[in-house]
Image (tube, rainbow, N blue to C red; front, side, top):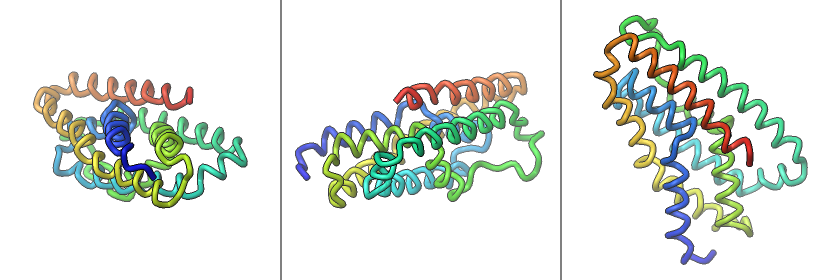
Length: 197
């Protein structure tokens, strides 16, 4: 692998990770509803889950999609259905004081598993491997995965922090309701770029 591409790869990884998408919309909603500290396991799950996903995509899953394209279509359909359900849950989230006792942010494992049904994560992973590890050698794939791992936490932390910034403003139930519905709509809108790929 030509290490001269590292600056371009790192820039691609950061920009694609920091831009709005399902993970970031959910982190902002979690930061607003649960605070930054309680959202940390969610963030770490994204970091580990997405890094592992990119490596596995490059190490062999792309070949499966190349051989059986209908599998990718089925994955998109399942992902969209799940994302629409999540958007509904966010839109109907209760205010923290009125939320059931069991209300909590995503756990580490839930966030890691979520990457596999996140259309933007798939689009980012497939694009990164295609552009920066076209030979799909294990070294090249590992470098791509590590580049994303290096920029992921700083990029997604911004969104969880933004959620905490607006948390005080969201103490008003009506504003919180508007915020949650807006986050749900943005989550649905974030599916569009990934689906046209």
